[in-house]
Image 1 (cartoon, rainbow, N blue to C red):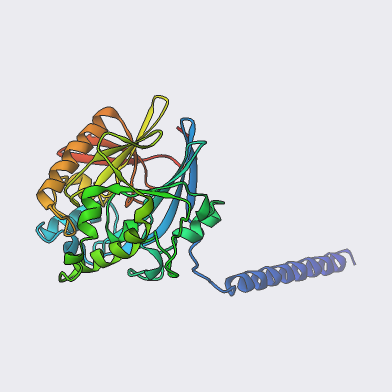
Image 2 (image 1 turned 45 degrees about the vertical axis):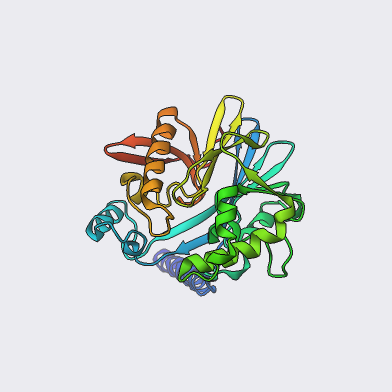
Length: 328
């Protein structure tokens, strides 16, 4: 009887275990069958910089295709080797767009505005306004829009699809050289990307001309933010130094588009440079200064959130991203 009772108990235990296993498998199968959305989550990141607060807001990624197209004068084998060495795709060049909102305690200052509503690089761009709101920032709260230069992915987010300013209360800053160049009507009919860029710049900059101020090298655009001339990528390309106490950061705009290619090969020439050789020399000069002075970097096109340091390494430079969650 005892053996029979134990046998029954064992059978019951075994049966219960089988039932639990079946239930767990069913739950796993149900979970695995949940629909996958593949939706991109809101892209914003906030940290403290001295007495200021900086929020990085993504506008999405630019897929420029074959890396050789971005650097037509450079050996393709070297580009491939650099990308492979850093575990990056070798068949396409992807550039994030990191817009920065500086909260000084008195003003909200937005650095660059993305590609805007036209989304010429696909549906995963033009995300600035949605991500601003996700970060708790309303476009009408922006006091100043500071532009590094007049290219498509930096000023085309100033005006919305309804023809009205996306940042209705903001003063807009850009260098006079870039404003004159990219709003020149004579260039609007130029062949290729230059004409397209001019048409878009005119659509976004001319409607706000009455509240546009020219940024001048070495002078403040708003308290705590000083313009730094960095010509070559465009005629009036401008970086901006941000200072809070003894902390200094630099928003580098398009000084360097890629955290590997253009740091490891600082004299490389980029297809969208107005003056490629001047751009390369400017890049080398400023990167040397940034590395030597250990200036904190806010990068428009490096991997999100694009914050960190540049250090001299070998014949070029290396990118050291700020660890997540660290305040300065």
